[in-house]
Amino acid sequence: MSRSVTHASFTITRRWNASPARVFAAFADQKMKDVWFNGGPDCEIVSRSFDFREGGKEHEAGRWSNGVVSKFDCIYLDIVPPTNEAGRIIYSYVMHLDDRKISVSQAAIELIPDGDGTKFLLTEYGDYLDGYDDAGGREQGTNLLIDALAKYLGG
Image (cartoon, rainbow, N blue to C red):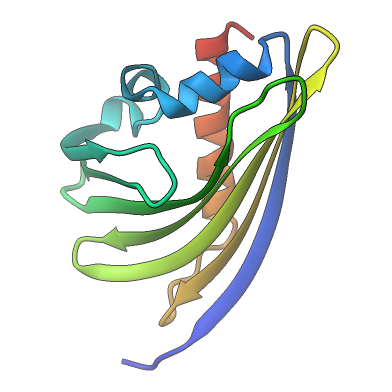
């Protein structure tokens, strides 16, 4: 196998009529996050752990209808709950498909008070490993998750 690293980044911006505290809670509370952070109907969750605090780890593995198991292993590096100012969540994560490590990423979420709602910014930097050609798939998949979060928040 040829060793290689391909670098990519993207930013997703949204605005919701939910308070920054409510958006933050959708990440910080496992029961709330379980509602929107999943693979949808084509993915069966096979393992899950959740420790939302600085230095805490989160894990989720899901088996897709084609039999492939994807694994998300995350460590939270910086957590600032929103008050009257912006909040943020910064984390690093590793993705596997079956036993193959496909990427290492860092993401920063900013929750900025905006009138009666929240301006949401997610910026992610990814390193895609050993010939894994993401071709924009991570950005597309993250957008789908953020769409599910928007639906959970009510718009």
